[in-house]
Structure formats: C-alpha cells, structure tokens
Length: 213
Ligand code: ADP
Ligand code: NI
Picture 1 (cartoon, rainbow, N blue to C red):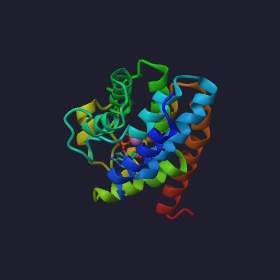
Picture 2 (spheres, rainbow, N blue to C red; picture 1 turned 90 degrees about the horizontal axis):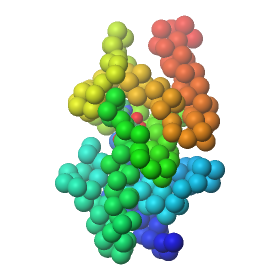
Picture 3 (tube, rainbow, N blue to C red; picture 1 turned 120 degrees about the vertical axis):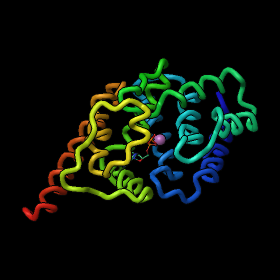
C-alpha cells in the first residue's frame, strides 16, 4: 500500500499544474475523477493505489495543455515520490489508454484502467459535463451553437483532435456517445441518469433557441 502522503502530494502537484485552468481541465476535474473512480472501485474491485494514482495524474500530460514527450509530468511526480518502476509503468499505461479519441478510443487492458476511463467519462456528461463543454468551447472561442451546423459521426483520432465544431456539435460527437461506452456496470448505472439530463437540456436549449419556450 502507498502511504496517504503520496496522494496528498499528488493533489498538490496537480493543483500547481492546472492552477486556474478554465478549459474544463481544472484541478477539480482530476479530483472528481479520483473520487468517482474510488466509488466505482468499491463495487467493482481493482488495485486501489493504482486507480487513485492514475486518476489523479490522468490529465497531467494532456496534449491540449502540455508539450510532454512521454508522460513527463506524471513520471516526474512518481520519480520524486519514490514510486516503484512497476507501479509507474502500470499507471502510465492506464493514462495512455483513458482518453476519448473518436472511433480510435481503446478499451483499457486492465480493470483499473477501465475504472479510471469510466470515471473520466462520467465527468464529461451530466450537469458537470455540460458545464465543462461550454467552458472548453468558450476557451477555444467556439460558438455554442450555429443553426444548420452538422456534427461529424464516427471520427478517427486525428479528425477528432482537429475538429473545431460548435459545443452543441460536441454533444453529438462525444458526450451522447459515452453512456454506451462505459466499461463497468456501476458506471453504466450512473451514466443513465446523467445522459437523460443532457437529453432534457438539449431539448430545452433548442426549444428556447427556436422561441418555442
Ligand atoms: P477528458 O478530461 O475527459 O479527457 P478532454 O480532454 O477531451 O476530456 O476535454 C476536456 C473537457 O472539454 C471535456 O468535458 C470535454 O467533453 C470538453 N471538450 C473537449 N472537446 C470539446 C469540444 N470540441 N467542444 C466542447 N467541449 C469539448
Ligand atoms: Ni480527464
């Protein structure tokens, strides 16, 4: 078992890394992913230390924010905290598997990876996910919605990364797809409610936009 001080240090480390980011990758995103992953682990099992470390560090080298060659930030934290090499490799492996890449998304090899991926995806849907999507869109100067804009289906990783659509398009290109991409039953159950909430939100959004309500 890793000592609790490692996780306290990890929180401090990501607080310094993300600071006041307003693009949907703030410190609290990683904290929520950690807490949700721990909750999923309670019913699904898996190595809790690996799950917690991977969850806290999962965005530490996100390509949108950092120019890391090979998980430099995550590795630096683990080196500085004396994390054994085998644990480091398991954590880095998970981090490289979790992110959404359109049709090139992968199902992580380990239960621990599948749980962290579920927790990260749960944070992209529901009320928090809606908030993050508009925050991200705003940070990139994207419009919320453009009538007639067409969302792109079944994108490969490169197309997904270079896509500059509206935030409403993003719901159709990622957020509404996530419910059916959950790995664990526990996450699938949580995703159902969050998904319904997004559907209600979109229905209301378009009704107000069209002046129907
Ligand atoms: P994650 O932390 O889940 O890996 P990303 O790095 O893909 O998420 O994106 C961070 C947040 O910004 C997520 O909530 C995601 O849904 C949102 N986001 C990503 N791309 C877009 C986009 N093109 N438009 C609106 N929101 C986006
Ligand atoms: Ni994330």
